[in-house]
Structure formats: structure tokens, C-alpha cells
Length: 382
Length: 140
Ligand SMILES: [Zn+2]
Image (cartoon, rainbow over all chains, first blue to last red; front, top):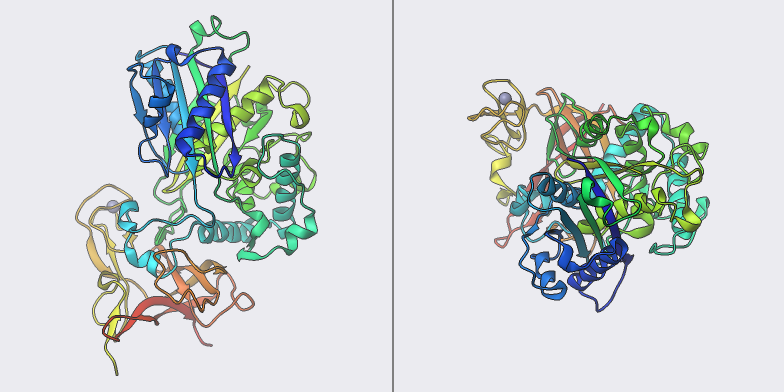
């Protein structure tokens, strides 16, 4: 069965003092419903996800108690992608025709903590006590090795951040809307060598929602539905290098991002060369660079030339993170993947405004990656 | 000399006088994992056997932790000094993540030879030294 997207909405990411994450989820859900021209009464299935909110389904008190099944799930940074996939799968299984996926979060300032006990994430407490349970260390160490193996320069890291904040400055709903000069990025404080302050995204607050339905009924509700051509979720294989790993095998395997994107292209029946706009997980610049290759947009090492030549900018060959990505929007973990879907759909419908990709793009990709080695990739088209 | 307490006894094989990391090896496929676990992540077999890992290997990647780690960091966050971290590739077919000693951003190099050492890390309530494992460059 084919699935179409009827509407998307955001509680723009940033800082919203005094607003609860549930309230943000409600704002995003109403924005997506308004965009679809539907009401909460039309929704037959709901899915929500969050790191900080134990039961995001409690938002139903504010939406209306219509008795529908409302499922919650959490898969780290891949939550948004898996919310959309689970909603699509439920429709395909015949559980209903119209569904909504809502992600929301509100994180404290500073680096993500792994929580009180590492047992809840499958690790020994010693790992946190000795100062090893930090995602930034992993981002830095994978980036460091990749730079060593494939000749990626520090300038390439800086240019990726320049592009992110430049795109943010052109996006009205972005959190960080100020372009940052390259030398300021290159001189910013070292966080985890080789990654500096402006190479990283920050935890933030916000929500995103997507309304989707069976494609054969989509025309009843939308003049221009966006088709969900593929949505794939993969966990790591033995041998991939993942965050928060006390050890890793020497034997190597493709990352979950590689596995998910390959399967998504196969499902969509198109290749990466046909993608005209992409949002990839850019927790920091190193991973945007590596994810370009992992998602099939270039070979390992080609990023150096690709980025130097501006090919990932809005007017480049493969525009990436056109709304400034995580660097300019921060990462409310539960919502992040659905923000990507919102942005690709804006681009495919020509609603990008000052950050619109030229040439009427018709095909886009979203990609999320997170702990403990999970990735979701979607392919969207009009 | 005060008694030394490991930060987690399960990390070490045998006596701390000759420190070795305690890993597990799969009886079916031979893959090795650290810390030790019963199930094999490579082939799904259950019932891995415990092994003492090699103590020397090559630095595969590294970084410097420049800010005090958040909770539950047990080190001295108030007098925090940046510290290096890396993965060391051991002959057992795995790379172990560890704090690194006796090196800094200027001296660290991918591929350099490293050896296992104990790092005095904190003191417990009884005043005993709490140690964890670390790697340091093999002195030439
Ligand atoms: Zn095995």
C-alpha cells in the first residue's frame, strides 16, 4: 500500500521557557492538522515519542478524547523516523486510513546526560563514572579516524558549519538565524578534538507532527499530497562503530545509516543521484560529512571537494540540511526526525521561501541516526 | 600501601598486581567482546567463555575531553583537567575504549603503540584508592 503525507507542522525548535513539551506537541499537531485541512476528529491512529516526556500520549487530553489508539515509542535520535514508519505500517496493516505522528522534547541546557544509572541504557555504571559515557567523544573519535583515513580537512568541518548557520539565517522558523564567519567557527573553543563549539548542535526544545494517510484516499484531502516512497528503520550490525561502545570489533560492517539508506533506495526504486534535497543527521559537522557518504551521495573522501565547491549548499548539486539542520535548530530528540520531513515537504511543495532549493525539486530524503546504533531513512516525492 | 579497589571488579581478570582486562570469547565464532558478556553479539550463540585480553595494542582513534563530564562522573569535576580518550586495537580482534595517560594532543598519533595500566582515579569512603584501566604510550 502507498502512503501520502497530507500535512506537517512545528512548534519551532529553540527555547520556550514556561511551555511544557506536551503543550508544544499540541501546537505542532494543530499546525499539521491545519496544514492538512483536517481536524482531530479525522485522525484514526496516533503515535508520539519523546525522551523527556514519559507519556507523550497524554497530549490527547488537550486534543480531544476521541478514543483512538495512541501508541508511544522511543528510539533515541531515530525516534521521529520510527514514529512515521510505525504510523505508515499501521495504515498499511489496515488499522486505519489517517494517522498522525508527533515528536516533542524539552532538554536541559548543556550536553545530554546519560541519566542516573547506566543500567537503563545497557551499560555499567563504571563507564559513566570514569568519564567515557559521552556522545561528543564518539562523534569526535569517529570523525578523527575518518579524517585520517579519507583526507578530510579541518576546513571541511568549518565550511559545513558555515553552511548550516547560513541556511539557518535564511529560515524564519530556525533557532539560530545568524550566519557565523568561518574564522569564528575555526577559532571557537575545542570541545572534543577535532570538534569545536560551533561544530556541534545543542539540545533544544520543540515539537513536530506529520499527518499521513493511504495514498488512494489522499486526493480527497489534499491537492498536492507528498508521497512516502520509502521509510526504513535499521539497527546496527556486528562491526559498525557506534556511540557509547566500551569496545568494538576489528571486523567491520556498514553502519545502520548505510543499511537503512540502501534499503530505502531499493524500496523507492530510485538511486541517491536522483535525490534533489536531503536532511541528514548533523549532530555535529563530522557526522554530516560522513553521513553524505553513508547515505550514498558521494564516495568516502569526496566530501572534501564537494563541500569546498559548495555542492551541499541550497543552490548546490545536493542541498543538505536546507533549514540549517540540527546545528541551527538544535535537537529536541523526539521531534528531530519529523522536523526533517517537514522541511523536505516544504521544499518539494515550493514553500521554502528564502531557503527554497531552486529548480522545483521533486524528490527528497531524510535521515536520522542515534544511540545505540539506529537509523531511519525516508524517501519522499511529489 | 593502601588497598586498591577496582571501579568495577568485573572489568579485570585475576589480580590487580598484573592487570588484565576481562573479556569474553564466543565458543562458536571466536569473536571477543569487552566487558565480558554471556551472549555473542556477532553470531547470537549463548555461553561465551571469559578471557584475559592482551595488554598491548595500537591506538585506533582518540580525542581530548575538554569539558567536565556530566553525572555520574566520579572524577574531580571541580578541578577538572581535560583528558585524552581513545580506542586501542588489541590482538584479540577488538578495540577497547579507555582513558589515556602520559600523552596529549601534541603527542597522540593514530597507530602508536599503547599498553594497559591502572589509573588511580578517586578514593572510596574508606579512603582506599579506586582504580580504573587506562592505556599509555609504550615507552621507547
Ligand atoms: Zn559468536
